[in-house]
Length: 277
Ligand SMILES: Nc1ncnc2c1ncn2[C@@H]1O[C@H](COP(=O)(O)OP(=O)(O)OP(=O)(O)O)[C@@H](O)[C@H]1O
Image (cartoon, rainbow, N blue to C red):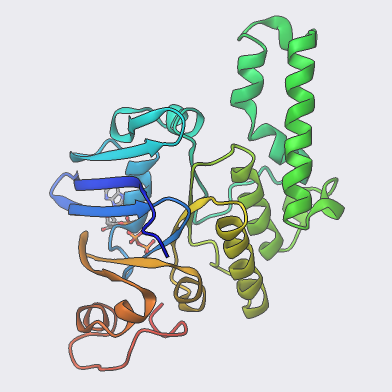
């Protein structure tokens, strides 16, 4: 297999909250067209990394260089969050589901494309009057939503209120919604949280499809080892904000530093199958 090009390069990232250092001089490469897992014990700094990447937090120091396939190099640490999603096409999901529960599944996916629709309205009243340019953008938004619903096998639920659907389906809708923004990098924060084993297996299939068939690079924070160990090409392990190991799933799960971080000094078991979550 050829070595893939680097899509995202995290260099010497530090994020401090007052006296607490949540990320401590972290460097990490995320390749294009691959799944990169990020694991680490609770409070290790994983979500803070996503918050820095997606413009929710401004890092204390460090750089986040994205090699955007058409726009060239973009410095994510310098962009506000709406531009990270809109221009850099780095899109995330959240640990806690953030769908609009009363809206239908289809509406949730259309709302996600508000940036495109706003631009088509030229930030004027054109949207209200549904002028031709706006109507066309609206139609394209519906078509894009319908395409992802079909690909994620959700079409039959398009008109259901999102909040009425089972948890596992809602997690899938969140991913569909993020895909509507045509992500160059899809950041998933614990997408398997709350899923049963069958749903976790379906999630694995979906992630492998998105990466393998659609070529989307995925950055995956996950405690469910049955997911992260099975789908990741490469895994970075964080503890107390520092990278303590990286490598293939097989390499990290036998790494003594990783075992120590998860299980404490005295244990010698490897990190597998959910035992470490
Ligand atoms: N806005 C904030 N203000 C102060 N401290 C914060 C803030 N956000 C995160 N932290 C702290 O930073 C550290 C890292 O938190 P973070 O949520 O990134 O960990 P995590 O690895 O995602 O944990 P988990 O696996 O439990 O979700 C924690 O000590 C947390 O309390």
